[in-house]
Amino acid sequence: MTKDTETYFAEGCGRCKLGGTPACKVHTWAEELQLLRTILLDCTLVEESKWGVPCYTYQGNNVLMLAAFKDFCSVSFFKGALLQDEAGILVRAGENTQAARLIRFTSVQDVTARAEILRNYIFEAIEIEKAGLKVEFKPPEELGIPEEFLNRMNQMPALKDAFHALTPGRRRGYLIHFSGARQSKTREARIEKCIPAILSGKGLNE
Image (cartoon, rainbow, N blue to C red; front, side, top):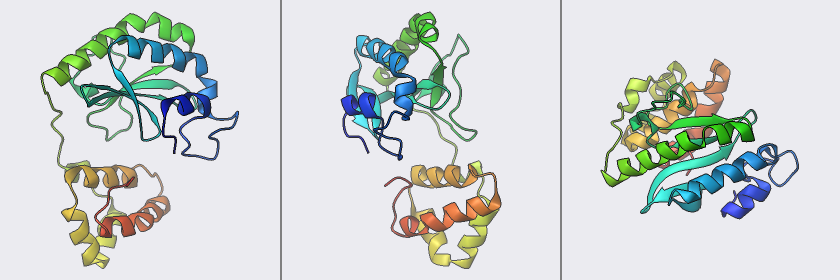
């Protein structure tokens, strides 16, 4: 996994086999990412490398991340659910996403056209950090526990105990990961792969 932002912009996050190759998605959106990076740094945010991608903070608090995907690059606000979104451009990263919101960009022209809106959203996000506002998360169980995981916990009481002993954030991460698979067989495979980590008291990406 990439440990510094310069490597990210040059080679990618390093999480998949495309990292460091011409096929890496950072090369698809190189101009857009550099333009977005300039805007973010102009807004008094501090650039750091977290989870392999550029993360931008204010007084040590995570505000947003910059990332490249197959069909777009994005700015993702950690507490995007608290933004007013007057322009109506924020989207959820996934169906069960509660706090984060993305702004997707697909061209340099797109970034340029929405630069001022983006700046306004960034400054609003900074004010949210200054005020110490928090997103009120629904309990993980309200996200729904996949039937395959319920069955596995019934088969393994130790797994059930270990799962419920996890922090709410860790439980939420697993449930989102399991539910994100469309096919039952894939959900079962994800569950089996994660069982050792759950039994060890670890989160999804720890």
